[in-house]
Structure formats: C-alpha cells, structure tokens
Image (cartoon, rainbow, N blue to C red):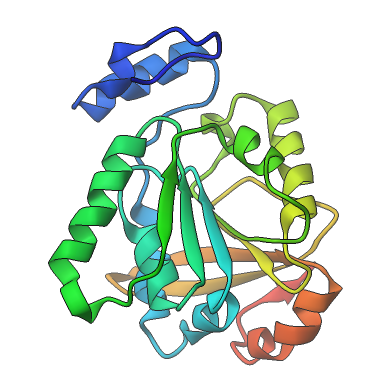
Length: 228
C-alpha cells in the first residue's frame, strides 16, 4: 500500500479511480499525480516514422529511465521499439497501474513488440535519481511541468541530479516538460503528432559535449531544431 513521507499508509493512493489519487497527492505536497501518457505516446508514435528514427539512434543500447511515467505503457513501448538495453518507469502514484499496463501491452503485442528487461519503481523521482550512480543513464520526462512538481527548489535538485547521472554521450529527453538542466547544452525539435498532424509536439534534448559530438549531425539533418 502507498505511504506518505512518514511511512503512514494512504489507502486513497491505491484507489481504482485516478481522480481520487490525484486529489490525495495534491494534499500530500510531494508532487501532483497526473496520470500522463499523451506526450510519451506522441514520442513513441513518432519513433515509428522515418523522421522519428532519431529516437532509435538516441535510445538504442541505453539504460532508459522515464520520470513520472504515469499509468500508461508508452515509455516502455518507446524504449523497446528503440532497442534500449532496459527500461525503468519511475512513478510514485500509479506504479501498480503502470506495471499492469506494461504487462498488458506485452501480452497484447506478443512477438510483434521487441521485449527488453523492465521494472517499475514506485518512488519519488528525486529519491530515485539520487540513488543512481554517475554517468549511467538516458533519462526521459514527458509532461513534467512545474504545476505537478512540489516546487522550484525540488525541480533544481532533480535537474542537478540529471546532470550527474546522465551517461556522457547520452541525452536527457524532455517533452513538454519544465525540467531544464542549465549545465547542459540543449536543442529543441518540433514534429507533427502522428495521430493528429494538426498538433505540433516539442522535444528538447539536453546533453554534454560527447552527446552532441556523437549525434549532432543526426539532429541537424532534421532541420527542425536550434541549439542553445
């Protein structure tokens, strides 16, 4: 059963109704339990297009971690499609639903979906990244806006940890997210949402010199981004 910061059980965070979990998470002051999925789904669907092949280049062979994965399986689908080494969904409020949705996707897709090792961590994103070693991960965050984070100090701590845990030649992929590690170079890419081309999605890639040395030309070939 889900617990608060003092270890007390909170039955509302195990409710079948995501709206009840959302309301309870707001009262706890440890983040906002947005169910998520829309922006990660857009990235997954883009990865299946010719232009979105960039994501396969960036994620192949990586240890991919999605922060605030919500309750939908698209982070796993993206990592598996891109042949990542493994995948971790970090989700403190919907970990049970995230686990069930990934298992359901694997069963539904069968052999048509590449399978990779995965796990779901039902912990806070700051707690998770603080426990990871240096120079190891490729990190994904979709829809992690300021309104669902505990506050600006929390965000800065997460951003600092992202710089530390990011593999030297890997990127932090931030889609519609306010997490913005200022110690890393970034480029923003825009693409039409495959399921609704009238909608334009945005993806920021944050990385160090080795990441841009390795993938810079691939990004430039899209002719969609500008460096900052």
